[in-house]
Amino acid sequence: MAENKPLRFLQDLVLGGTSGVIAKTTCAPLERVKILLQVGSLNAEGEKYKGMVDALFKVPKEQGVVALWRGNLSNCLRYFPTQAMNFAFKERYQKLFVRPREEVGFSRWFLGYLAAGGAAGAGGGSGEQGDEKVFAEGRSVQGGSDSDKLQLQ
Image (spheres, rainbow, N blue to C red):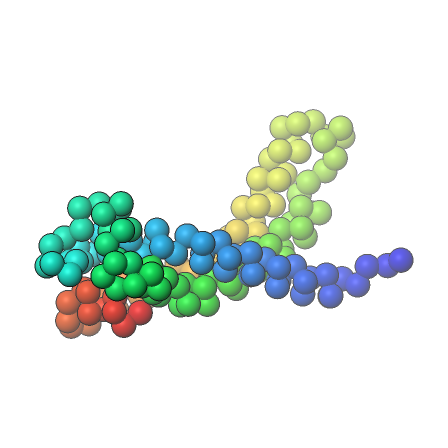
């Protein structure tokens, strides 16, 4: 039975993007705490958080558990296409770069997988760095405190 290639490619896009969103959502609380610590946000008492653990426990107490996922939707919308293309193109690059291990030896076989993964990653993530730069520049131009900016996300 012949495989339907366009359907397989579309399936890989959806599965890759979905797996990326699940990964981002799972790690969102740590990402949120990291951002709070980087910008020097203050807790409810007007003090800076003392570290990751302190912030990880105080943010839910002060703002509710959902606050740990604040800003996650925009991360997921940005990350979905990147992971979708990476996952979908990786198999195609493997067919291009990887030869059977018995035929070419371990080194060339391993380098083929490295090249396939690198090519898929380079193609899938090409638009992401521009978004990050615009986001960072936009934050430095906007007025208001850092905590106000984080509240808007």
